[in-house]
Length: 249
Ligand code: 13P
Image (cartoon, rainbow, N blue to C red):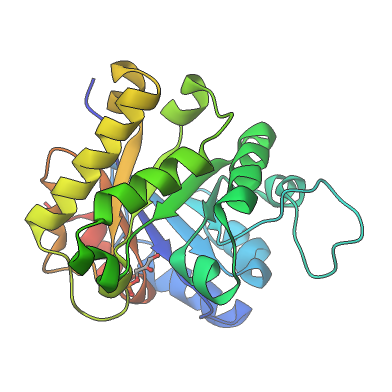
């Protein structure tokens, strides 16, 4: 069975709650699609107004992060249960900005992935290499290590429902998109890694996105690749262009 495409915006630390509601109104008619799952991953403070603003539309809401504990003395953190109760369906885990700036390691990310799944959220698990790693020729080794570590103890059935986002760090926010061949090569490699870890059925079911300077002009070519099931979009998700990316065909 063909995998359904999924295009998610990662708003990062942009949009105040009132700007968020405005953006939802701007995008409402532009992101309508029967063929593609559409997700807005938004800052925690925007979750409640955005859930309200997209009610009755084809848009689902995602969080950009969460903590793995259920509750308690973790000042500043947000639990999976809180996200679910607020109407969130997806959660980005292990974005390179969280790995780099907030020192999130694979051991922590593994706990987050398991907790998200247990709570009924769909994790969008991010992986990706630095420019130095690409130049050293260790891209696939690095990504396989990330995937294997982050999925320890996760079952095949759980992986089938997940989303994995390949985001080369050097392509994020730089306007320097990976070539279609580079993006497809790594997404294919991720699928092969999942097949080795689990089985072919699981590898064929999991959705793998490409992220890194996805735009209205490169989305069609990227998303046409056999192993690329959509995109995780940063900058271009904050403007009307996002509608063109969703309706890339
Ligand atoms: P840009 O689309 O701005 O390059 O960001 C990609 C990204 O990090 C999405 O998670």
